[in-house]
Length: 337
Image 1 (cartoon, helix red, strand yellow):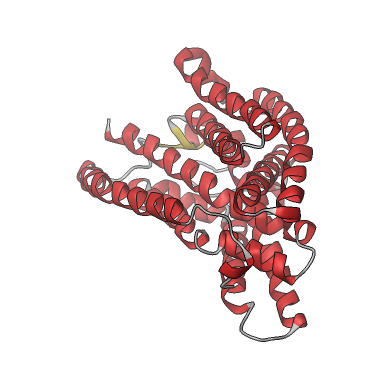
Image 2 (image 1 turned 90 degrees about the vertical axis):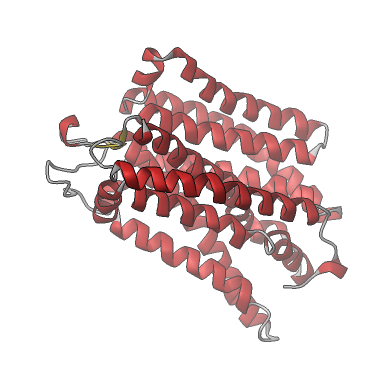
């Protein structure tokens, strides 16, 4: 029972991380296409600045929960996906440093360097997270000893890359909508236009990825066994359609929340389809790491659950307060970065 509870929490933590950090990954990637001058670039930085490090807390929490609740899965994941995860880590570090260093020197070349670091440090994590999770959905080549039998380049298979493209598009739309919420004037118009143009591309890619998932993975098996799970992909579809409706009304907060629903629905669709597998083996299903053969002791899971029930609501309350307090648009007089 505790293994199942922590499997659900594991999926929810990743879904919340993608929902929150997704908008600044997407916005950082699109910054060169939105900003026409340094003031607009600074507005984009300030639209992300107060939130990005708080959003990263959910990545740390998801990773920590994997380490503590499912140590076997954590060990196998870092063995098999080590190169991809290390590249992801360096990219996130690069992005974080760009926020702090950009305005330390009054030089256009200096700022251009860190702007480029922000773009790379935003695009690569979005792509790599999609590639990693798509490979997990499909199954990775781990043997009976939990040893990864592939390479970094074997992760760049067609289905893995399709997952990467899907994640990038999800985050690009999410980031465009966030900038539409947080800006006005020409910058807001460009953000709104980008969201409108990216939406049909996202719709097509999402449909193709869903069809590819049916062919390339076993995720749908749980859905045919437990029909109530179809609520999860329906949430994703509903959110995707609502984005279009809210954008048409220029209801930017509504569109952003609809995009959030889409990202959460997509993530939970994959997680629910995996259960009870955490890392399915593409060599032999018997070699898969599951919530049961990869978990910590019952005592550890009980202690962790108690801590989570106390601390997670505190984190949610704090972040909710931050988003409400800083909900207004960013103007030139508000610039800090």
